[in-house]
Amino acid sequence: MDEFGNLPEEVICHILSFLTTKEAALTSVLSKRWLNLWKLVPNIDIDDSVFLYPEEGKREREGILQCFMDFVDKLLALQGDSPIDRFSLKCETGIDKDRVNGWICNVLRRGVSDLELSLDYSGYDSDSDEIYCLPEELFESKTLVDLKLRSEEYGVNWWRGGEYTCLPLLKTLEIDAEWITCDELEMFLPAFPVLEELYLADKKWLWNETVSSSSLRKLTIYASGFESYLNPESISFDTPSLVYLEYSDFVAADYPKVNLTNLVEAHIRLMVTEGQVNLIRAPNDEDDGFLRLRNVWKLISGIRNVQKLFFTADALEVLSLCCESMPVFNNLKFLCIKSDKERGWQAMPVLLRNCPHLETLVFEV
Image 1 (cartoon, helix red, strand yellow):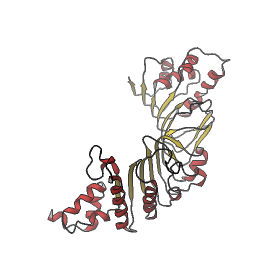
Image 2: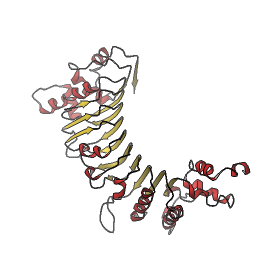
Image 3: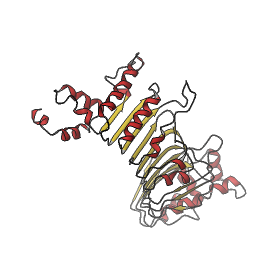
Image 4: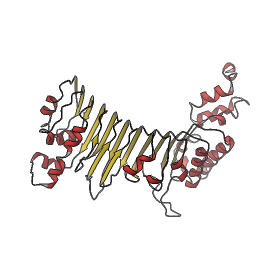
């Protein structure tokens, strides 16, 4: 311990930055020198579920949430205006939302570049009856490079819509929630001029959406539709730099533009209802629903340059509508099909014939 303790403070703080804030704080009992070292660490990891010693029912104990909030207030106050690299915060309902937004603003003022927020807050505040919103400063940061927003039980409201957002250095954006509300992606994405990775789940499309970005290299979208309608009218991808696509959605009525010329790997998880499966298996050119499903060939043609391709059982079922317009996958070397006994394999022979350089074929049950 003496040899370790003789290291420069900068080195010790760097080592402590790999620990959670709780773990780093426990080192304060080692000696007088260690008493305040953990407070100088440029990374903060706060999780209200592991505050002090986790016990069943402790969260409901009178005063414990107040104690937690006082701890975070004191920690941030002791750090003053010192620069901070990463801030991770996990909170559930019961933690004062205004104080949470104050903590977020504190690290934003100090130049945080990596921000991860897991906030499971109910949609409405019981006192003000207003939807909880993240602070405006978050969407105008000039230092954020990585931003992750998560909510396991509730949703994420993007402040005032994409047209008022400006995050010029943001390279990674991940939103994982029960629902996400923001403007149309065509208006939303220009606010991130150097964005390289985008993860959205669970996105509820509007009628027509266009994913357009010249910098985007990795895109993951899990869409679910609305109760009143599941299938979007049209989805377009104008992402010429994209190399990885993971796309889960109900089949759109049209795919007007699919610019994916540099795509290397694609995971296509198209979903269909039982009624649509019946239409696919009993083609009817006079049925408007059937004609709309058939436009899926535009999406499949747009991914023809991939080297690795993954299809779900539903996607393979839909692919049977593309047998006559199936593109040739000249670059494809790896193909994975996830099977389901309730779904058909009619497209498989045509698909295999159109993969002349295929090396690996995987079937997943």
